[in-house]
Amino acid sequence: ELKVEQNPLFLSMQEGKNYTIYCNYSTTSDRLYWYRQDPGKSLESLFVLLSNGAVKQEGRLMASLDTKARLSTLHITAAVHDLSATYFCAVNPLNSGNTPLVFGKGTRLSVIA
Amino acid sequence: NAGVTQTPKFRVLKTGQSMTLLCAQDMNHEYMYWYRQDPGMGLRLIHYSVGEGTTAKGEVPDGYNVSRLKKQNFLLGLESAAPSQTSVYFCASSYGRTQYFGPGTRLTVT
Image 1 (tube, helix red, strand yellow):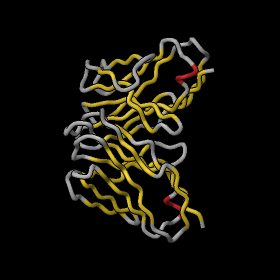
Image 2 (cartoon, chains in turn blue, green; image 1 turned 180 degrees about the vertical axis):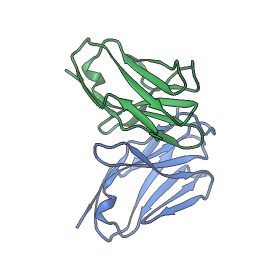
Image 3 (cartoon, rainbow over the protein chains, first blue to last red; image 1 turned 45 degrees about the horizontal axis):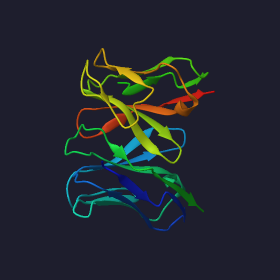
């Protein structure tokens, strides 16, 4: 059974600081997703990481994937208040694009002045 | 192009009542999914469908039934609602690598 663990689950950080959210998963997969959820809203796709060593960046967020370590990171650079949200990583349990995703519990990020 | 839509957005049920949640997508996606989201639990898969006329159980299927009579619609039914089914329900659909989520249905069972 595939397990996906995120840490930390709660993160309060000051504006301008850097931080990393970690996502570990328990079985082989070469496909990992990061989603963002604002309070009371749906999930918005941020990144799809498809291969070992994949790195993607969008604004102040950068995601990477190490399939050998079964680890993905979401790095936040110079945080701003608008990044406050809950971030989920999700993994396909099999190497199939349409297999249902298994989600981590989410990291609730709060960026404070 | 509306994407993934869900009906209703909010609902309050009494224990034992039944209801159906409707998910519709206009992207011609083969795959559709129902998840529930509870505080501190992330999203958990209830049922999913790999095409019209097919359904399969996910991680937490008990107490729910689903049907996919048309490709664009995926229905989630609660035959006898229980307080443990109070949650936010998300529908999603996919064709390629990314799942697209609906806006959610907030259900309260009293």
